[in-house]
Image (cartoon, rainbow, N blue to C red; front, side, top):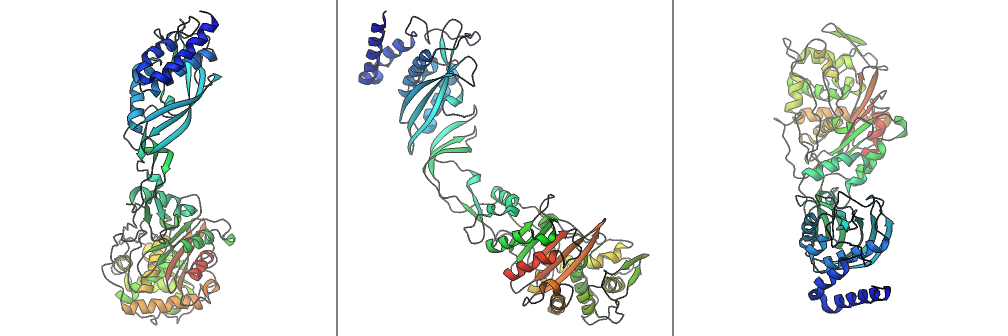
Length: 552
């Protein structure tokens, strides 16, 4: 057959496809795929994948076979299209799944152009084309490509994998169109304003991801489009959107404005990049308003379990009032040092001895020896030193809290069976006593609220209750004492001038360094902060707490 005849035959084939439609398909496909046009078999023979030609198909050969394959596919002659591939059975099944999954109504191809040797399939020639698919919900257009290979005896085949259907589609994946499948990554975890996405706050990244996976979203609307799904039908990727849905949301108790303040506060330059963590609560209901932290060892705001130092004197004082019947004016001599259970205890530098000090005065200057003396004398009986533990559990709600959304927090610990020097050390927040900023913020909140409200990050989350409420008498003493600390005591250098504030500082020894603590409340919020390596509570954690109190 000469060249003129071949061109005429190709034109006849095209005319048949246009005029005859599906009814003339079999004749046309035989003419196009039966030979390469020069007497060389293309797809009409049996393709032998085990014996490939060392020479890739020419561009013309590759385009010719690709057109035949696409013509078959566009007319939904899927077995015919599959026969043009190197794995017909697998290709036929995948092509049918494409049709069914997309609820395909019409399929067409354009811009079928050779692109030379394939960079992915050795010995193949790449042919690019554009797909226009009319599917459930709309029309989807995207670029795709095939790799055409040749066997040693000259038979051509489309090298099959799922990326023929859509670029990058995995072998265990398929396509679906219409209502987009649920995708957990589209759920927005938001602040209590219902709008601010918490993922914008660096400290809340892990918390947000955990809540997204565990809490039930509300609202939202499903969009339509095309998506990649896995073998179980779960959404992997949305590749085309016809109508945008509105993502469901999970609303938290976080105050976006206060969270922004907290994020900045834990990075205060005066902390010199020391790890810091802070928690702010609404003391009226236990709602967590802000959680922020720095450092490389996780979220120390809710999991930084450290000795809380003198902030524990809030609970020690409460135990002295509730269990020993003392008052804020009861004697609490402040000496330079004190021995208890063969262990010598000292005060922090700058604390002056005052043999006639009261509990309130000792609390204001944070005298260790005063609280060890009174605690050891009134609260340890016949080696039973469980009084501080009992006060923390029964009045301040110490226990295993669930703040909601699957967010893990570390429980504080005041062992009921401490022995030796730890019996005295516990009263100043040392020894085996440990806490987190979350717990210490709750301690301050309990004082200000005159009652325990378990911290939660999801509104409506179950809140544990304390076995008994703090007495009005004890709450009154503690509020007065904490106001004294903020106005004229150890916290005054940072907090003086803030109206309605009560506080307690703490400095705890840990190995070769100290950690700084401060817990406080205002007319609306309760806050606690920990700075690892802080020289003192006021000169480290104080820089974190003040802006939160001022903003709250």
